[in-house]
Each structure stands twice: as C-alpha cells, then as structure tokens.
Image (tube, rainbow, N blue to C red; front, side, top):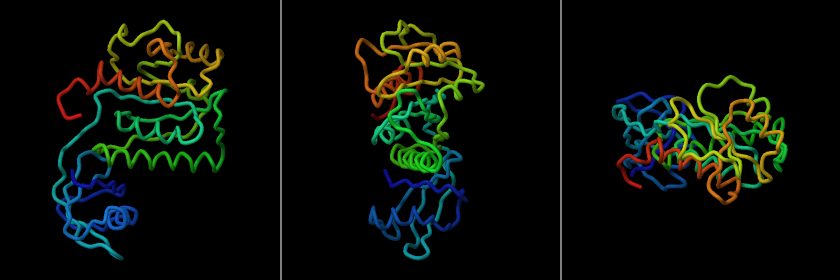
Length: 246
C-alpha cells in the first residue's frame, strides 16, 4: 500500500496542490520518498486521492487524481469513554481504538485516575492524542479521523444528552455481550482507570443508563479492556464478520 498522508486543509481533485509542512517532512525526511513517488492523500471528508509527489524541499507539492469514493468506516458508531490512565497507556489506547474503528474517543477524569490533567497540560495532551489518531488513520487506511474530545469529569459527561447504548465495563457484572441485542444506534463503551470505577461512579453510570458489562472471568487492565470490548463489538455487530484481509 502506498504511503498515506492526512491533509486537513482540504484537497482539490485533478490538480497540483502544496503539501502541508508536516506531511512533506514525513515523506521526505522519514520515509525518504522522492519526486515521482506515488502516495495517497485524504482530508477527512471521506474518500481518498491517489497522488504523485511533484516537488519536495522548500515548496513541496503533489498532483492529485480524482477523489476515490473509498470508505473503511465501521457500521457501528462507537465512542470509547476512557478514564485517564498513566504513562503511555492512553497513547496506546487511542492508537489501537482508532485501528479498531471507533468514531470518537472521550477521555474522562475518574476518582481513581492516577493521571491528573488540567489547563494547558490537558489541552496539549488532547492535541497529542489527536495526532496519534491521525497517524493511526494513515496507517490503517481510514479516511475519516475520529475526534479525541476534551477531557471531562465522568459526572459531567454522563449528564450530557445521549441516544443509543451505553455499556460500562465492570468485572463481575452479570451482563455479557453475547446476551445483548444488537444496538440500533450509537454505542458508548466506558472503561475505568487502573484502580477501576468506584462504587459511586458505577451507581452514577447505572442511573445515567449505562448497562454493566463483564468481559469474561478475568480482570483486564485498563489498556486491554476497552480494546477487547471494541473487538468483541465489531465481531458481533460491526465489520469484523465481513470479508477482507486481516
């Protein structure tokens, strides 16, 4: 597959366009591409463009072909509601969740979250996670970039209007995916921090319409649980049962 690059300012078919500086730097300095190499560009508006690098250096450019109506989005509109986790766990979760087809990622501050973010630190970290989402789209073939939302307290997010299915992972819960009906609308999956949800948070989530859900008999780490749930959802009701390459 030709290298893929996200161009957020929009693309115009069948013409030559200047390349954003980060795209040009990655193409030339990291991937060592040269003028004449074939690439794929996408702008997040759906579809993608086959393109050829026509200039690098100070004025990088590419010539685009027509917009190709190629979509690789899941039939399930899933939001991963991930409690803040420490170290590079959030980076990992964002990257893999995008590969698994989420529509959005909502970081939330939970009572037992080790990572505490506010102010400029929170803004910078969300911007960092958004760039990870972009890179995951480039790698995985997605043409629409999931949004990493601003960090909210769990209680604040639960108070927002929502239509669809809400599932909150809770070890030992009676609920199991195999016994649930296929969702008819959006799905939100809530994943707790390293220490798990508090009993008060579980009660609050239940009152807000979240169905408790266990993923088998074992307790999964925060960076594992959400990804396992996403894979299970895609297998039961999403795009994993379809034909295609692994």
